[in-house]
Amino acid sequence: MTDIVTRIADADATSVTVRGKDLVGELIGRRSFTEMFYFLLVKRFPSDGEARLLDACFVTLMEHGFTPSALIARLVMESMPGQPQAAIAAGLLSVGDVHAGTMDGCGAILQAGVLSGEDPAAYCRRVVAEHRAARKPLPGFGHPFHKPDDPRTPKLLELAEAERLTGGYLALLRQLAAEVDAAAGKHITLNATGAMAAILLEIGIPPAMLRSVAITARCGGLFGHLLEEQETKSARYIAELTRENIPYRGS
Image 1: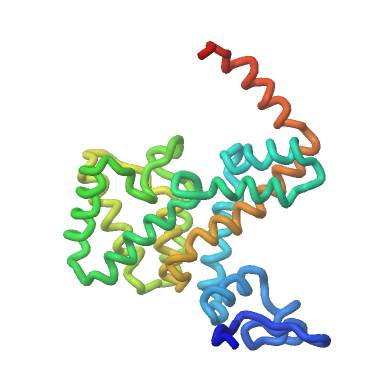
Image 2 (image 1 turned 120 degrees about the horizontal axis):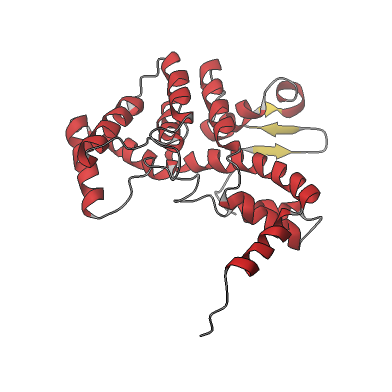
């Protein structure tokens, strides 16, 4: 026998139970997708403010145009028509340390800073100096085309401010942004994933699960791309562009 148990869900012939709640009697028609997502991760239902902020994060990352995840999903859909799950899975594999998933790295920095008890300004200066010395990008900062600011970030921070969150993560993020600018000698974009890292930590999302929000949001957006791909066949056009614009030069 094993001592392993699950506290997530169970089902029998007449019922389904999710974290102690009856699926039919207490959840279906009573709780939203966002509330259930939070419930499964945090083990309690969110307050109205927490649900609004999590929902805002889902909406923020659901769509961003022809990103790598969208392109990959479209190409796989072209190769495997009628298999949307394969295209979605392939697209989600690109959500990582470069695209959409950088909230993980920023969240780790913010969590370490809050837990350290170190003076916030000194902590942020040290983190920025370490990244600059190693020539490593600071997660949550910089953007290839949103300059000088990411248009999504002020709205997210405005929503967070309205909730009067007190975990210290948002304050530390602002301090970090100030130190990034000071070290660079110019303004550096605080991107949406940096703002989301602080917000998600503030509302209790476990640090190891920050990227789950990006993955869940992008999954929804990719279905829109797959539907359009069926109509426009853009993957074939993309493949043709590579043949026309990336010439063979031999070995």
